[in-house]
Length: 532
Image 1 (tube, one colour):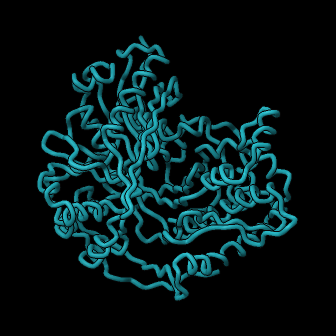
Image 2 (cartoon, rainbow, N blue to C red; image 1 turned 180 degrees about the horizontal axis):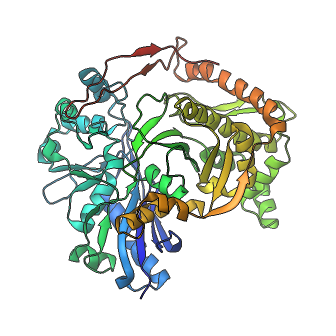
Image 3 (cartoon, rainbow, N blue to C red; image 1 turned 45 degrees about the horizontal axis):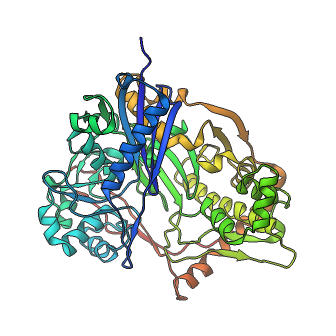
């Protein structure tokens, strides 16, 4: 019997990857394409859905050519994708407006109105509810023609199947979906002025959305009728691809940005500074703490401060520039001889949301070298991740070990620094760059019956066997560094926000149980800004 394969598309902000996997999640062949983000001065960040579809088509053809696999062997397709996008389409499924992606922040005024109308303090300017309300108030002609409001993945799967659907991981991030009852929240839709009929049906990630239409099959070079499984958002798919799927398990994503994700049995809106989400495994949920700038800080340093001589030295030794930077950092003692780096290069998201705070080097001295600055960046990211891990621990999940994925998971120097600072054992996942695509493929494998459940998937994810354990001899040093790091947030936040009165006043909130009503308690308590 011919071997079966699964196609997973991973739709990111800067590009998409098509990956052909076997049913164990191993990547057989892959292809990537990039596309642009259209920014505007009012905070807009949009992408053209046709650019996405073109990238999907091109990468699918290239991937299949590399693999030399018969299309008849494709058992199914699925997708991981960027989340909280907003795309209005007409009755034929054609976009009426470019997609407002997760970066789009122009709906701050609408968010403030919705917070007042609904009593839901967690609605921000990037939330889909605020974006939809922005369309209602600013693009009434477009909204009147809108047949469905879709997220990014929903649109592409419509192009594949002709079916309008979204999955629970995406719908639970909209703020107008009841994550307990798994239905759209009519009371909140009323506040947004969004008719229920303008939304797609919401389904579990393992459900089949539909089957590949003759038109889509012809474009993609595949067979008509291939089942397309729902899949999930990028962060929930990464949970599956990391192998940390069962309650209490955690994974760390380390790339341009970074996040800590912890799986929980309950949907938890009380966890301070963390975002709740439904998992691809509908029986579990997750808490996510994301920092906006991690590897991006290293990329900035490389582009702005590394010299041609550094590039030449790296090439002579057969190293990439980032491997060369690792070597410079490794020659510097832990603690970077007192130099502290604050990684808030373009605002921060968790465990405090502050779009205006900015980063920098603190205690920079004449004895500090380029290597000191690089190590300080690695340590600064570690300090911020420790802050997020602490928030996860406050939510009741023991900070013990985490599986690591993303590009940063390939550097042993950084992983040891992070383990030493956070006190968390870090376990290296095989092929860490492919975690999102692997997660989408394995979600499809469950939906198609290759696995009974996600517990079997968890056991199937392969690890390298490398574990980075905290060095107890460095604990006191890094405890002191962390205390210094945390003490620097309030003044930096004040400066970034151009005011000296307290900022970042956070509100604790809870949701009552209920099916047809959001039942939000107006306020449980107000918190003064936390300062160590």
